Length: 315
Figure 1: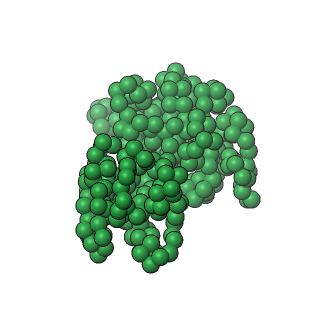
Figure 2 (figure 1 turned 90 degrees about the horizontal axis):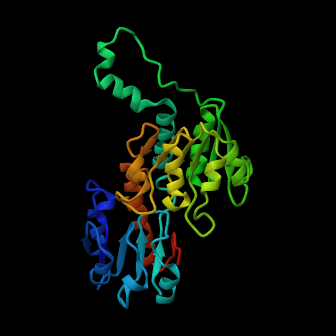
């Protein structure tokens, strides 16, 4: 059996891919441009992919491909209808990154709320050592205890973040298409108007595309913090950056972008150095532990496929 990894670099250089060799030939490519996909997967039985788009134009008439393993939970980069017509199985990985993404989410919120980079920069610059006062208390920061934390999307990650928010003493409200018992669920407009902290954890689909719109950003409190660790296109990126730049939001934290990596033409490029902006390179999912869980889960799906069983199947 031949396994091809089309964008192995997205899994990290430190991830040991040797366990895959038990299936046969393993061919890892650090990255793959769309025009090279069809050639590279020729003769492959299984393709492992993270972000590369797989559809009719890239897969073409490949006749050997039997299974696609997506090294992620989101599957918007794979045309499921086309794969179903071709008889190609598609698996994703669910739950492997919950702790990792929740940790980054909370880290962003705390950093923005507490102005940690600014205080750290003050000490690093030597100003603290040269000063005559034992402390510095500007920019002013506030405790998040007693604040309202709004969670958009209440899956595994959203629930984990909710538990941490409650531990900090926050009131948690959530927006989910189907309300969940035990949580205070509200409509998206109410959440945007009410929450002091808003974290986004919803998948990207027709219903969530542009969900955090310019109109909803305008509804938010001037001292609100917004963190998006879901998908870039869930938010109106230009409006979000404009609100941060104009001081209409206390801060924004973003780990995901509609185009990755974002280029100089992106609205994020203009605000990346602002003190109330925290941007990270789509790394929330990728703790060492999470990436190893992801690999083990994909292997379990391959084992099931070879045994004639279905596991974590989207198609």
